Image (cartoon, rainbow over all chains, first blue to last red; front, side):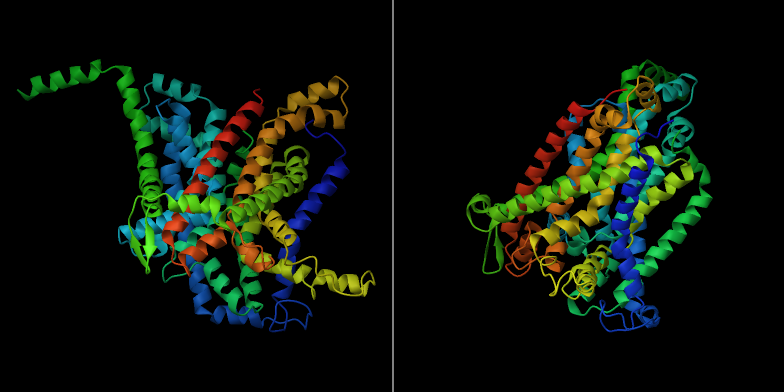
Length: 264
Length: 303
């Protein structure tokens, strides 16, 4: 029996924390239906007009798509480069390993603005035009450590014996990766991808400096919030939360095996 | 002829030491990420260094080899004081989010009975990221503002007669907003560590007569330290570098270091100064990582 301590006390505390996390989201949702120019009290009545406005707002819809596009790109980058880094860190000793680990972790402790100016200066030097791809490269660098740390932690838990056994039985590198390493890290990788996408979707600091003409959703909201705040911003955030929950629940059903395997 | 060459080649391959094969494999895994971090971090940082050593004259960058900008970071107001204030806000955020996150992580690790529910709550921790940071921060204004839900509620209950303005536009409201935004990071980090606690350890302690409080204080709390440290480092760093909360919920003087850097890039067009601040913060970041690595190493429990 894993549970210990006063169950009702623990549950109450945990639920209060969840309430704290969701109180502003609830407020945001309620006021997205407010029939008023302003997002705030008084609540003038129920309306769908901010959602209608949202679906007519091409700039907003485009920026939602841009954010999804950037997020997917970031996930691809951080898997393609993060998984090899985690494997190298887990399996091998090499000179400069300690420094490599520090460098990899650096973007998560650095303010996004600093990562942003370093990359912006670099882009300007090599005359790279700012676009969604420059954002992707920046966020990919900043978020790769999420994948590296999650996958590395899982690899450490798994240990080396299975991969060594496979090698002794004559499996080549690719077979070892496909049949031993990948199944072992799959659920950790899935979690890391989910986290990387979620953070990318709401990333402001790196994006703020690296964005070109096309804006991601947070950038569009940022410019809206500085001019006039209408409940449309609440509507778009509410819509996204519902969409994300639907997507996640669908993903949960699709990968039910994954969820159960988390503990393995 | 070719057969002989091939035979020689095969022999050569077969006598390569296992070590060389290992090294080849290491390169296979290490080269792509190494190349990535060199191109997108080390070279940009080198560019930053080059920029920081020059200065700007009449909106034009003049290269140079001067450390003036670095001296200015530590001697000219407001740079150093703003860095210290940002660190203070980061520290408060780290402390508050650890305290807020712990019960939820604890519940998730020990009291959720089914895997499905566990995954669901795990997702509930992540989902707030999907609701835009900006809109959530703005929602706090709706709650805390002088015409906000809290004030209207307290007035209608007769607790106060005038709206309380203390809730918003000061350093505390920045601390609170940042705590709110970054708590999920602390939850994930503490939960990952608590998940490592073997069930057998708890059962053994219970069999030996320990009550819940004792198990928590003597076993769980010490084991959880590295998770708390890791979460605190992340929340500290994120809060330290934030520039949105000071603008949305901060007071007139709650400018943070990222705001200063943005102003240097934009209005002041002093790239060298911004680069110097950036490099100072990069060095501080490396120190922080080393310190946290050391701390986690020292406090980590091996099972």
